[in-house]
Image (cartoon, rainbow, N blue to C red; front, top):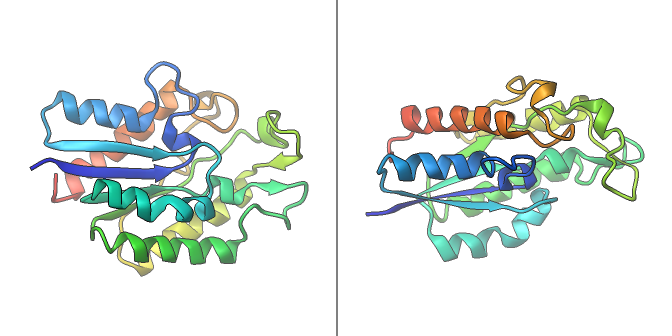
Length: 202
């Protein structure tokens, strides 16, 4: 029976920055299909999404696909702030509540729920980001705070957490935020190895 994995996230999940291979989720799909695993990988990454955006679409997209595994790779846009650090897109408190609600909804479909941690940025290129008319910023201090919330919520709910904070080097970031092809490949390898060694369904 074909098993479905839904990967929910943002532009990094979608594959932004990887013009060669289409991103780490696409590489994951290619690997499992090429090696005759009975799996279907659905990329549910939407550029610009934060956890509040994800909540508005999560349930209906799950109902359409009926996943046996749900992977969340969300949070870096929550940590983004406009002009000053006290003006985040999603507050720490709201982010924490959103993750709890995502878990609650996800458990209606499967008990196999995985959280993927955030990646660092090259601050010189994203403070502020050059592709926005507003003064929007990413910095590693703020990203770390949101990453710690993901890890905390994962542990409280006995869910796997894949830490990526020290995985990428600045040379593996296409524009300071999105991984390039090499960066996406490193994320793919990390997630693939975890799935093969830690998830019984595979």
